[in-house]
Length: 276
Image 1 (cartoon, rainbow, N blue to C red):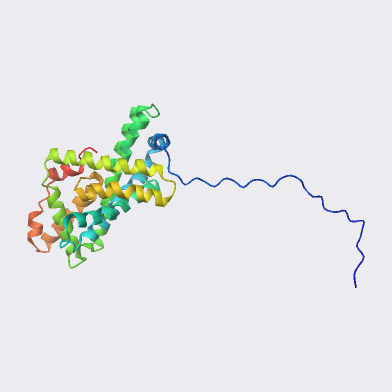
Image 2: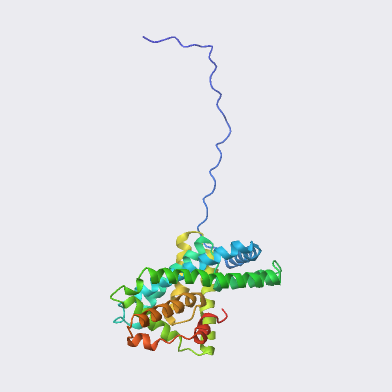
């Protein structure tokens, strides 16, 4: 049975205003070269004005992330001696790019990309003392982060992976690096730093993690596959080789690989301290 309708109930008013427009979808297009330059300048102007302790902590992370990338590189080269040299090195370069991607995504400080703060100095957004102090703090604490990962690798026994092949890659690689003269190390360092700065510059163009990953892989794989020298990576790699070499001598395992790897402090400096 139907119920009578209460005619005294007012009808709901009907709004004639148009519905609000949906916000425009965010563009996924990469930035223009002009916009990249603006973003890079703004980012590099912020870094040197942070508190020194914050810069130091971020630099420890930066050194650690690059060392982790090198751990991945070493793993890809273990047992790869039968592959063509260029192919194996390219695979290793792609693996090493993970380290720089971690630096970019986490906002860590890395000396080889922090050299780009010269942009902020040129346009007058930071002072010379801020510029210089930032470089010094980042370099020193990148070294700390790299050494921490080297210690973890040693105490974790990574050198025994692949029937001791992992440690052999480290020793052979260090021996090859120490054959460079000072002049060669300096020039190879310039080339490597150019590649890192290009990778970071292109990462500013990306708006997604995938964009940034693709931007980083190419330049990093280029410098690793070609055998260029990255100072922060060497802060991890050469001390790790020294640890493995000393351990091998203490255990009376004087393999030819260990005898070829005589890493003196002076020669280590040529690869580790060269200006990037």
